[in-house]
Length: 276
Image (cartoon, rainbow, N blue to C red; front, side, top):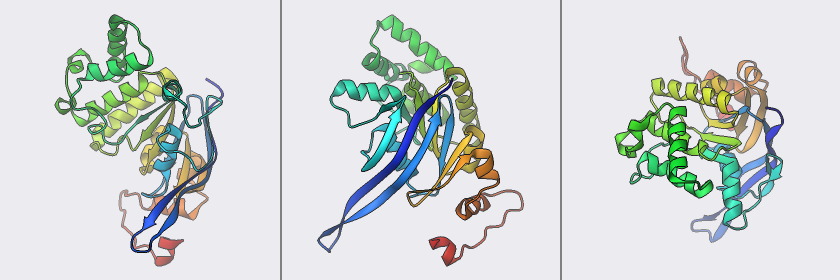
C-alpha cells in the first residue's frame, strides 16, 4: 500500500479550568503545535511520560476531543466536527480506537457475538447470516473461536478481552487503528501475544497504527516511526531505529536511561532535569 492515511498539522488543544477560590479561569495548553503523518499500512508510536499530551492527541484524531487549532486529515479528507449521524458514522469507519482497559471498554451485559453484531448492524447492515459469518471471520483473525462468542467479558481473561476489543475495532475495516496503551494492563507474557497479533494483523489487513505508549520497547517492536512528546510539544520525530537507539534530544536519552535492563541502577534526577 502507498500514500498517507493520517496527516496532522499544527494540532493544539487548550482546556479552560476554573481556579478554586480565585473566581477566574486558567487556560491549560495540553497540546501545542504537533504535526506528523502515518503512511498507509504504517505504524507510528507516540511516546512520553504521563501528562505529555499523547493521549489528548489520539483523542482529537479519533474525534473524542475537539482541537482548538490545527488540522487532521484521514485518507485526504479533513476531519471536522461531524454534522449529523451519517457523518459521525463515516468518520468512525475511518478511525477506530482500542483502549487500555479491555474490561471497562466492553459492555458487561453483552456477549462477544452481540457486541460485534451491534457494530456490524450499525455500520454495514446485511442479513443475520452475513453478520454471523463476519463475526466468525473477526474471531478467527484475533485468535478466538466460536466457543468465545457466547461469553460475556467477565468470563474472559484480560488478553481475550483485548482481542475482542481489537476485533470490534476492525469490524468496520478502518484505515487507521489508534491503540491507546492497549497492552499496558496486561501481563508481560500476554502483552507479547497481543503485540505479535497486532503485527500479524497489520501485515494481513494493511491497516495503519497510531500506537500511544509510555513503553519504549513496545514502540520499537511494533512501530517503524516514533514521535516523542513532552509537556504537549514534540521533542523528537523520526524512524524508531534512530530515535530509540541514537536520539538527538536530551529528553529522549533520559527516557531511554530510565528503562530497566540488566545491571540497571536508578539515578536520582536533578532539579534541572525535572524542570528542563
